[in-house]
Amino acid sequence: MTIAEKILARASGRKQVSPGEIVEAKVDVTMAHDLTAPLAIEALEGMGVKRVWDPSKVVIVLDHQAPATTLELAKDHIMLRKFVEDNRIPNFCDVDQGICHEVVPEMGFALPGRLVVGADSHSCTYGALGCFATGVGSTDMAAIFATGKLWFRVPESMLFKISGKLRNRVAPKDIILKIIGDVGVDGATYRAAEFIGDGIKHITVAGRMTMCNMGVEMGAKTAIVPPDRLTREYLKGRARGKYKEVFSDRDAEYASKSTYDVSKLEPQVACPHRVDNVRSVREVQGIEVDQAFLGSCTNGRLEDLVEAAKVMKGKKVAKGVRMIVSPASREVYVDALNAGVIQRLVNAGAIVESPACAACMGCHVGILGPGEVSISSSNRNFKGRQGSPDAYVYLASPATVAASAVKGKITDPRDV
Amino acid sequence: MSRAWVFGNDVSTDDIIAGRYLIKHDPRELGTHAMENIDPAFSKKIKPGDVIVGGKNFGCGSSREQAPITLKAAGISAVVAESFARIFYRNSINQGLPVMTCPRVRSGFKNLNEIKVDLKSGTVRNVSAGKVFKAEPFPDFILEILKDGGLIPYLKRKGAIKSGK
Image (cartoon, rainbow over all chains, first blue to last red; front, side, top):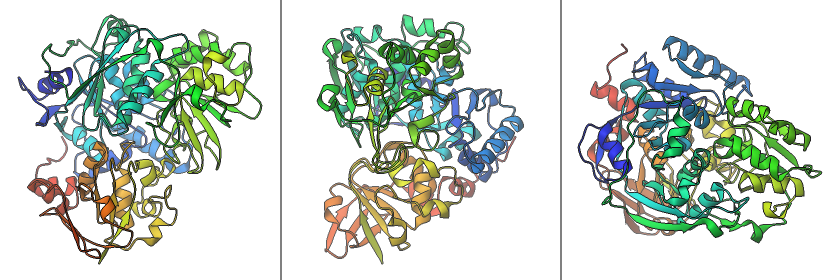
């Protein structure tokens, strides 16, 4: 069996499962945020259920438009705080903590071998720590709130073997963009993506999160990196409870296997309006940008901010460009402050926003107007994603975002 | 009479309902913004019972369950597409919006063709063009969920939900 199959087998109390089977599995941890929890709670009330099945296994995060950006949302936040209080949910992240997909791992809830389900499509991020993590909608979340269980179709797995070491200023984001460009936006639909190989050993947990985060952009149900030394180091002092590492068997069956030698990989960019419309930065360099966004659950971590600050060293954000930085969490923010990174970014001309989903999804700070162009470290460039349907979003690594911010046009970070 | 509205591949949940409207709780209000990215006037063109015909990977992207809620509230009675993204598919069934996977359906329809969808047999008919398409039929329990108008009314009717602890 693959890791994905083993975790679903364990969670559904079976010895063996195979792709295509439907299993009812016990969920180890569940997460919902300010845009998905209200509907889930409404559904829960619709069922006549007053209490969640196990408050210690529920994480509620206010992050998508935090602090509240409208009166309607302020009311939702009040309702969610009351829900948390009534249910005595100990793991509540109010508007001051950051993005769900950063705080859930930081809080030690994403553990090898666990089944983690979030009411957000990018919940697959947690697979960077060797768990089976997937996103669902609000009614499914309500079913989990009520019973702690949900049905799943056991996915086929796709194996991606990463070999070689990335060159300077080429990032894990470039690897995942390259893969999505090859696989297509629906090439992994209903499947589990498993990333292995000596190349992965060189990639930090933060970089693995970037890669797993975007698994859903090729349709994947989950994306997993087998646990190793770096996983254990990350979890030291964080892990909530004991965990058992799970690995794929040697004879595990895969729907496909592919190998990526990343040692010669160039910086990549996903062009409007599709995540699989991927080119090398060199091919599209020179396109003028109005906004550069550094942040999101894809690339708002400390190493992302550090990399951007390195690229921007001694330079300023170009005239006419708005550079928005939002650290992924309070922890990242504090670490970046202590490392002097925030100061360097601000001195270079960046606007620093509080940790939240920010400019990623067009309903908080940094909304794009008609005809505007954004270079963004986030995960989606759909039409209208960051504001106007007539705006253009290019997705790239933090280094490429930083290089483009200082040049005012899409720029290969090796040219700065 | 139901009419078809034809869309392309990879219609995202951002297309179906943009992020900035997710704070709205009234389904009718959400419905007025359906497919706004692609066609700002779309919600005004729909007559209750109309059907969306899509290409591949319909409903990709965000897990927002407001997407099927929006389409239902706008008057759409079913979505027939060549394939669906996973979360949207589950959410639609849970909301009682029939979503039928039907190979090669997209090129078989033009806007405003008369369409007839039979959930039980999985038959999709282009009445205007005299063409018939075969969708994957639903298992019985999903037909029941759809008939009840979603997972929650279904579970309630089955008495599967015990009231709070």
